[in-house]
Length: 59
Image 1 (cartoon, helix red, strand yellow):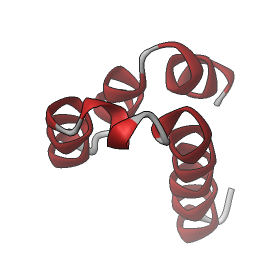
Image 2: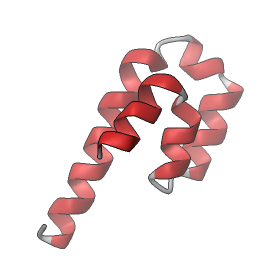
Image 3: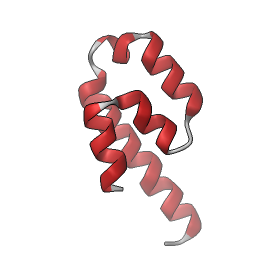
Image 4: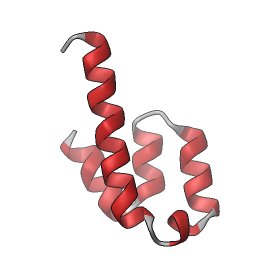
């Protein structure tokens, strides 16, 4: 999780690609990081994706 969150802060499309959300990575790249709101939105969204996946697996 620390790697994904660090990527989300530095290079948000790479963070989405890292967690397996390729379509979101492309959208993020084409919209210029959600019109620069991605600096706040992407780390939170990546964290919820990872915790949701962990909860599904029961880890």
